[in-house]
Length: 130
Image (tube, rainbow, N blue to C red; front, side, top):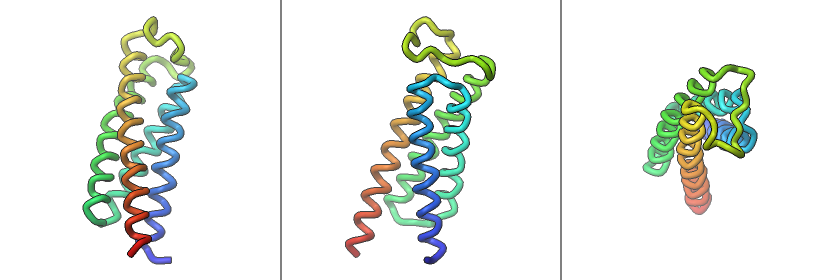
């Protein structure tokens, strides 16, 4: 397995971890899950940055940049609420402004991550035909 294939494995791992922990936060409201999602998003971005790839890969890189620009501020807002606080996702309307902003930014990161995963699947399918 060459360096490019190993990087693709790591990209897939970090991207899937970012996506699933992002969804986990949206389901549970646990601020620690939000912080972990931010870490996985940054890792996915760094590995994608290392891999020089074709047009689809660059679009996926842009999606990861968007996700990081959403999830890192959301994690900072979540941490500003206090490490022991859980955001009540079932009643987000009555939460603080910071909690609503963190929740909204996390949805933006979720959409960017889903687009990145779709692009990764399309790129993989295209490469497997070659």
